Image (tube, rainbow, N blue to C red; front, side):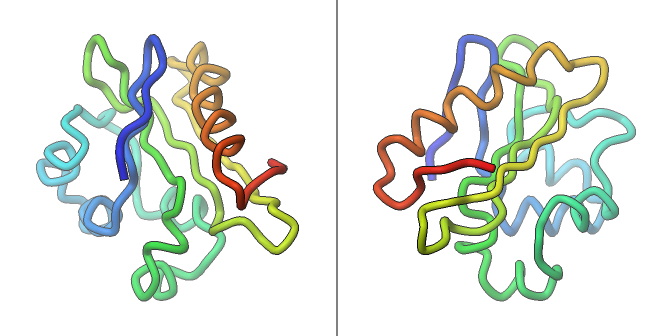
Length: 132
């Protein structure tokens, strides 16, 4: 899965390897996987567990379904992680998918920017038509 970009952000796919590195608190590996620095206090196991609408065991068994569309928000200028966008699983039979996102308070100016490329991808992906 390729990264998506806006003028200010790169939306880097969240992979199983990245989730495992975050859960293991292996910052060097996590930063290498996204080619960016993570904030000192973010993320952590509790955030990963809240972000995905499934138990971690299911995410590990079927990462392609549960990580579909999930992205880490990285500033293009400083290569810093400022948040994430998670589409909780693939679209359902009606084409609906739940969108969740989190942005560091100090980086809240990126909130709208982070969702712009997701809307474009949804419009070209015959499966998902609605965002909640």
